[in-house]
Length: 79
Image (cartoon, helix red, strand yellow):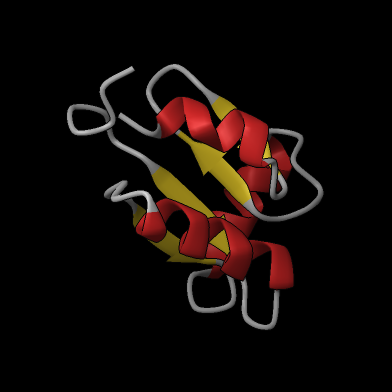
């Protein structure tokens, strides 16, 4: 999967250790992503809850959506 051509969004919140670990993993592997912090954008929290997500982080890519810090799955986003 070519991460340079897909849009990757990390939904996070302040003081979330798994969120920090996901962002660090992606950055260290050169994966470009955007971040939406639900503490700063409460509407995003509602959106995630409506989609059935109950915990963070949520990582959305074109063909993959996952939750939590899962290096085995995150590696799929590394080109």
